Image 1 (cartoon, helix red, strand yellow):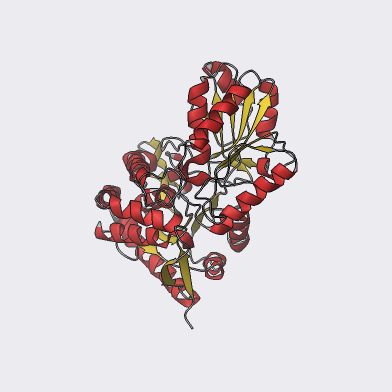
Image 2 (cartoon, one colour; image 1 turned 45 degrees about the vertical axis):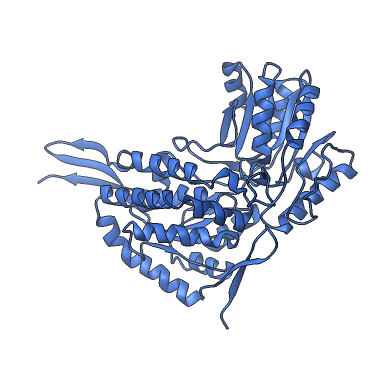
Length: 458
């Protein structure tokens, strides 16, 4: 009997689509085809590979309405935000622009006697396990540079965003990339683990939960396969006494609430200098109360449902527990809140780090705000987390902010902004956020291995 997966739309709880899950034998055969196709793919000039990846972006650029509508149906992001093509194209374009330089051999010596150099060679087949929250942008972070570097790619997209994987495959194939070089597969957990444990692929990139990352590492244990993980965060923002208050409120609250809070690098904790605290909370409450929760297909909606009612249930549980422990909830239940996927965004004060809402990843539209007396207290609280993805500092003093940034245990530090991936900078984390290096020239180092040549001339 064929196993299937149903994609439940958060808009109304209906089955949006059903897809067959690939059997283990079929998945292993697909991986073998990828392995066999890799030699011919890497033999193509890097300029050709770059051109085809760029062409895929052009194709998707002509289909942005499809992207926007399908994202709304699959994971609930309002259509007013227009999909993800801007960020998708920015990241792909940058990685294409720097590829030839990043992949160029490191020349040590080329004399009458010796030629010594280090080349970057692809791992072989890269498996990308992509999440649903930013389904195009997170996938392209690895798919584009992996293909450009000469790897074949197997994409396993999240069950909540299966059509994104299909859309990407269509575009890349239409751009001329052979079907065995880029494959989009619908896989269950057991088959995914089997591909890793049997070394059917050569590199795996996973974006998702800590538990998921641990499962990936266990499956790959003993294979010596590189495992790249980005496992979310509990990202803090710190508003110093000299901050631009209005800019801090507007940007940090957007960072906390956009995409219904379903952002790996979304703001989940805010620490405000005690001199600005009351004003910040007042403005933050007004900001959230100005949002419109509703159907993502309605252009007036600014916040859609969470991607699944079970995700919303976890956020509600964290909020309810915090309130029971003494936190204050500032936002009244909104009319569209149905107790399911549609969840009222919430601001909590009187919170402490004893509360789950300030420790566990919420991944939803809730943020706790705490006053601090100085930089030292803020640094201690920002570092009091199992996660380390990004942190945001708000100050007019860039020198002091960098001194603070040096003391924060995180992968990226922002000053006067947040919740943004700069493709020229390495996307990485520490602690339970996992280990990996995406985007920037460093991504090409991760997606290739060094090969040394020590050639004595006759």
